[in-house]
Image 1 (tube, rainbow, N blue to C red):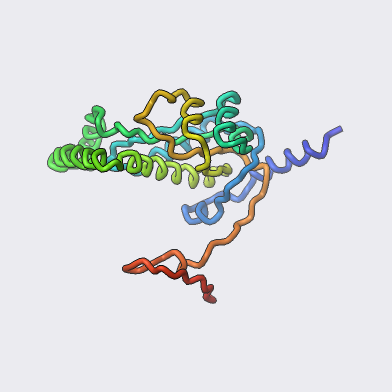
Image 2: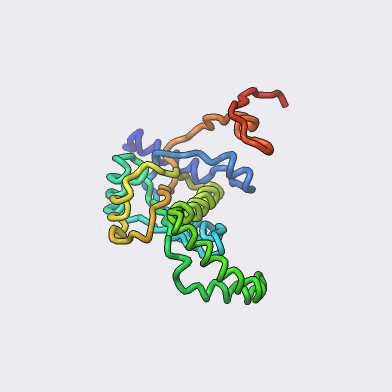
Amino acid sequence: MVSASNNSTSNNLKRAMNSKPVTSVADAIKSRRSHRHYLPTPIPDDVLDRLLELALEAPSAWNYQGRSIVVASEPEVRAELENATGGQPHPREAPVVLVFLAELNAWRRDNTDIFDEALRNRAWSEQFAAGSAESSRQFQQDLVESGLEREYAVKDAVIAASFAMLVATELGLACSPMNGWNEAQVKKAIGIDDRDDIAVALLLPIGFAAEQRRHPGRRPMSAGVHFQQYRSSIDTTRRNP
């Protein structure tokens, strides 16, 4: 005899696997929702590889690519991430949690390969490459002196996470960006508790949704878009098309 819960799980999986494909970035933006509950179904390796590949296509300052992704799929690691988030269910239920990291020392390492590839691809000229190397070092040093090095690095990692969310939606996967966690516990869970040069930017549980989520709505564009100067008042008037 098949239980009602098993039937529900099977139906949810069929719905996720047979959902209408997302065919544009606009579709992904409009249809993406944050899911808290996931089916235990593993993500196929080729699907996960595709997601990671495209997430790393995200732009980064000076193209230094100072962001990394830790793929947490082992139950023990996800359990530690669950504890780090105060017991929220996403890290435990999702088959994979992506931990997006910001590498503060990316500009200090040997980035010859990045410059060489840009030159081979004719994306940069010799003059531009030479100028970027010098300018980037000075810019980053200024950030260090002003105490903004960490903030600047985290931005690149969050951009990559945003790419991952849209790709996940295109691939029929659910996800939920998480910004509520204890950084020390997250770093310990993924083995970098001794690395002060790496910052945790975002956690992104990914898998097949075990729930349906409706769009909660957004304020009209006029409430969040400002022209020339910021307005202190918010226009929430909804205008008819």
